[in-house]
Length: 192
Image (cartoon, rainbow, N blue to C red; front, top):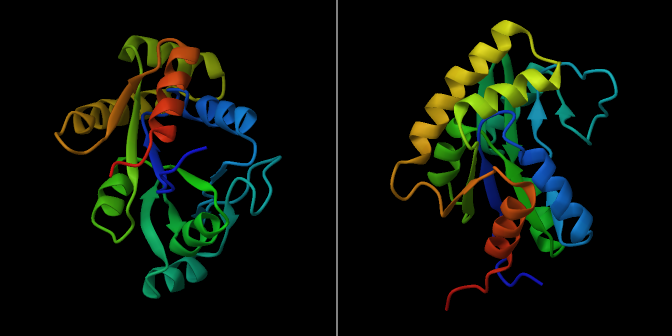
């Protein structure tokens, strides 16, 4: 049982395995965690459900939440807006769950400047070549998207090396080893 209940902000390039690590945490600690469900202005993709993958909202509602200071972070990506609700984090923390946030680099910067006390983990690929293989192996990305994600991955890897940004950097070259590092970090006793 984790004694440190602060949210855990997990960032890293697309395709690095964050979702797989989250799924292992949920599988092995079914009642300990919840994934913060972000708000987005993009349309739901086939198979996605409102409130599960995202809260799908119109632009006007999203902008109202910004005006009400309702997000701990928000960003625009590929013409759509994404944001993490302060209320969601507060409600889940009160229920005794550790909130996991899958946040991109700009969101990490915003959370660091917010009132939310959090812990920060960066998941890195063993190499950019490996990351490219994983992205192409998905079979869901266009060539343009693969290239865009690799450019972004370079920026994120560079940012991850900034001193004091992350509490832990995990290189995901072996899933079980990466999981063990993440699990031990989350369950480390709260420093006195």
